[in-house]
Structures are given as C-alpha cells and as structure tokens.
Image (cartoon, rainbow, N blue to C red; front, top):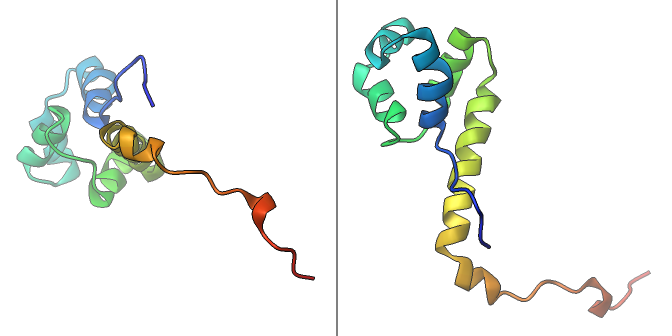
Length: 104
C-alpha cells in the first residue's frame, strides 16, 4: 500500500492551520486550554498524539468537534501502521464468502 503523500500529523494541522494564522504560540494555547505547555508544544511539533482529552479541549476552543481531531489522529496512525506492515498485509488472503456452506 503506497501513498504519494505522507500522512499528515494532527500537530501539523494545528500548527499550520490554527496557531500560525492566529499568531498564537503553543504556550498561549496551552494556557487557554488549561493544559501543560509541553503537551501543546509536543503536539505542534509532531512528537505526540492527540488524546481524547486534548481533542475535547481543542474542539471547544476552536469550535470544531472532538471527532475532527481524533479522526485526524486515527487516520495518521492507520496510514503509518499500514505502511509499516505492508508486507504482512499483502500475505493475508481475503475472505471468500462463496466458499461457505449455506445454512437455512
């Protein structure tokens, strides 16, 4: 499973689409969210994942949804894992429903 573009970390979206346009630092956002500064700094520098707690706080502050942030994280994680186990996935044979005996 190859992809032309690498998966986008939610921290990149936070940094480029929210913090930079607002001229807001990670520390300022952390203060608004009532979380440790390092949590937002590590997220914005793509060193950590979005947690449900952080997703809820980001959603409230930016008027988005927690699902927006969690789905972004899930997509990032799935794409990275799929690339990491590409060979193993290729070796799995797909289920064939036509081979099942009918019970009725």
